Image 1 (cartoon, rainbow, N blue to C red):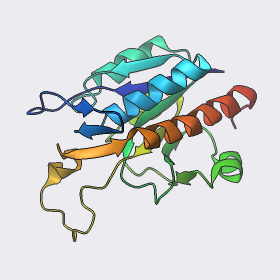
Image 2: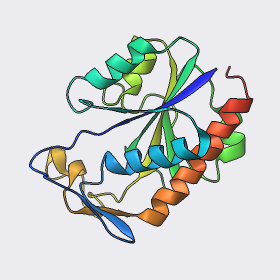
Image 3: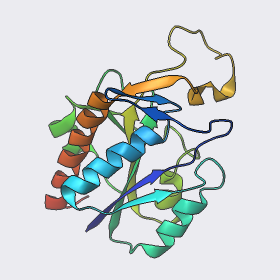
Image 4: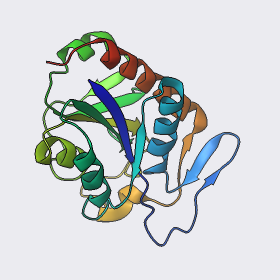
Length: 191
């Protein structure tokens, strides 16, 4: 089984840049925390990573990548989440295999969300539903811009707040979890 990472790099307007200092990634951290995590995991494992575009629109980048992959490929979609329940990582939207073996080994570091949490909102729908590949959403926890607010949230796009931040230490920690997952998948058959 081949394993690839997929992380999208769309940067929504009106954001012209994001900043990284010696401790944090600052600004619109959605997407880029996933890119930094994917990069680190790829460098440590040798697993290829595809940085896709247009996830925020029609998933054109994921469609292009999916067309080039053989059916025996596991695609780990790396993106951000605000729903990891204080764990370093999140797994959801799983297509084509059971997470039960993973839960036994990784439940101390990964929050597992069963079922299809976002049926049409991320690239797993392209890789899993449209192209029949084994895939899942690996979430990098970012601070919740809705923390302390009551539902309904004030504006629909506020998940993409432009004044957010994530520590580089948190990115290192979630990258380590992803590396361990990749190593597990490399040694085990999926059922």
